[in-house]
Image (tube, rainbow, N blue to C red; front, side, top):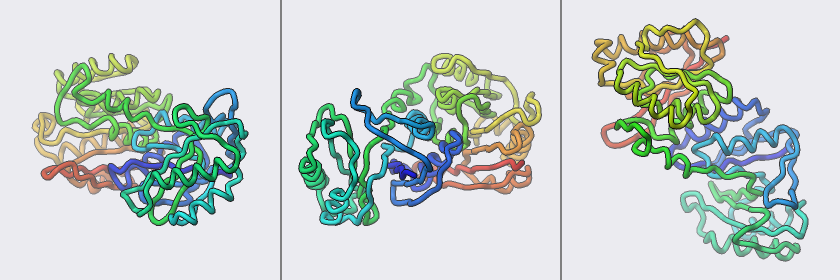
Length: 359
């Protein structure tokens, strides 16, 4: 059994946790949550093993579960690092050093290392540099040698909520790629859409993955579908704004050419019953779709009933809104799993509602 820590971003207290759990479930990785700290989630993954590949400065994954965990770094958006936990201690320097002294390191002494420390929200009076230097001294005394430029092994100490989580970095998330896909950098730009990192996290919460069929019935410029498509999902989008739909096609053609887009009403979709694995959508409140529906109540009732109809039993829908949709969702026969509140700016608070269609 191995402990794996996910060092999470600070965009929201709960959404990064939900994203990790959704991604683990999508990858069919057996796990249980062991600890949850501020910006750190630690899970148990049974029968997980790792060793060091001396021919490359990476951690070699030697069983199926470990291979699956390595895939997470390519799909997660609100995580910084995935860490194989070697020890957990109180966050005082003597406790940290005592814990590191007692770690059973299995790396060959010929391999080089690098140590980095992160204090979550400055919750420790000890400087990160002092922690790195002291832990490095312990490793040096054990016969290891440092290489700050191109190390074979990266160690990380994360201090949060009075604890220090120390371990070997298995993978880091390339968050820069999401910056490259900001809405204004895409072939077609329209203001007011979700940022790529949030869109990707919602796709993970919906448990979408390679080969799954994901629908966005209010696809707009296609931002959600781009993120799902880059993960290998089969993407289907609908919209009633022809200009915006043509823009979505430009964006999807650029990033994920294999897609399906339909000019149709989300409240009356030309899709078979139970043909969609998951739904992620950000309905256009206050815009032309609302005018066509005549009221928010009619818009949401019709579309949620249609989403329920086309979603397979056991499927999940994630709906972004500016107002509560739980009552409409329950009337459409959904079960409400979670509701996350995200303050965007002074005049906008976003609600993210997670819905399940039971078997």
